[in-house]
Image (cartoon, rainbow, N blue to C red; front, side, top):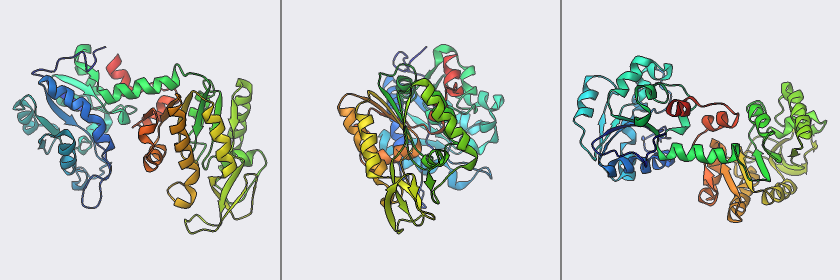
Length: 397
């Protein structure tokens, strides 16, 4: 397979699919530039070789196509600042004006195309639309791991219009694949997966796949209470998926059969309402009073989880331990982020993925103290479920 480092971009126009789907405030300023920063090394490699870059991305989910608030022109200042280059912009992504702009593009220049999702053909994976995009450049570089699970025109279908020699992953995509494979294919043992988040239903496939790989599985967050309830515990007004009680028991039994130790919280911070101003108590996870709800793991659970994590050599974290957006219920998640940093320092491989977990390590200032923070939300989850991602497959095939 062609790699970014093995290819000479001199005189080539590189079509680079990036994920610049970044949050904007009411004045259209970028509030989190993580995804843009992640794409800069790929852009710089192409420019340093003497090539030119045509950036393709989506922004938001425009329904009434096109919508001003989803125009990629809003992110130009942020991209220019990080790339250290002037960005040319064309307010379309296919058509005569776009052709004209790409044909006149000189080595060392960057052109940003308008939001791909202003055309329904993008999400439909339309071959004709894909071909129009492909015709704009000489080389296809997919650096958008966050959209690799979508068989969209620019993320998957486009690749077939380029030879194996002229299609490749960008640095971010390659890094995502390499690091995620460390926890999927060849994890160093002992291996612990920390699964949090609100619901069991969204994590069933991942948990079932992980049970074939991990030695320990830590469960936290709202999904805890479905397991506790299934085991006969009193969960008060905590979030419980009544239709997933059998599933929870099935997971516990499957873990036992496979020799995987499941670690559930033993205590929690319960509140009398879903609010940062709520009254709180620390109680046994099995004995939450009526009308009270568990919103974070308690101090004993933190200690228990820390012990397991510090004895592990491979650590995967997906999902918070509580409602960490509220300061009162952020301690459990923050403590996990901090112990991951200690484990990394001690030589363990630590991978954090999923929007909330990533937000948590950023919030605690631990993002650069773990081994790898994945930029992919849905893509990471599908990859961990054992699914082949179309955006990856298209480049490799």
